Length: 150
Image 1: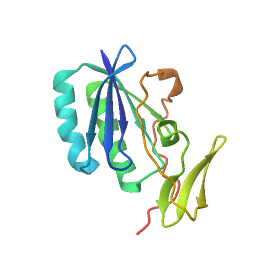
Image 2: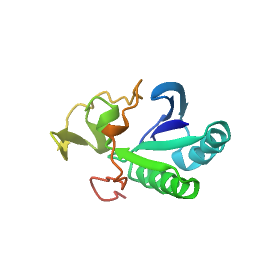
Image 3: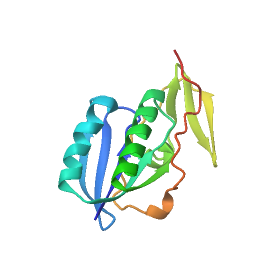
Image 4: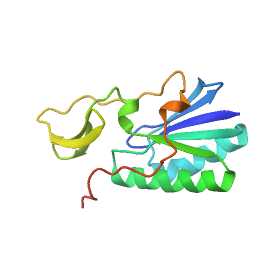
């Protein structure tokens, strides 16, 4: 059995494949989540038996969060896979995440808020080398943080 971590909030989309809780494969794509998730998961489901999928449920791109949640939730229901989630700060060392304009999401203790930042911080997501399922929640609903911006 394998577990997957999916970070589909911005480019590149990252998927980590874990065997016995150790990262064994990393997949990255610059394509949009709506295009690439079906392609990647077709291959992953042919190659691996998946027990858990963990995903970053936000904050980030409103559309990317929505697409990844609907895709992953549907897949997990159909394939009887456990879906777990955590906020994106888990995967970027608690660095501010772009919202819109100069507005960024920041995590202060357990609250995610927005702040105006004059300088854009370097934001990079990384996959953990070891997967600790106890760090994730079965509450997998998306966290948008702010409403859709037109």
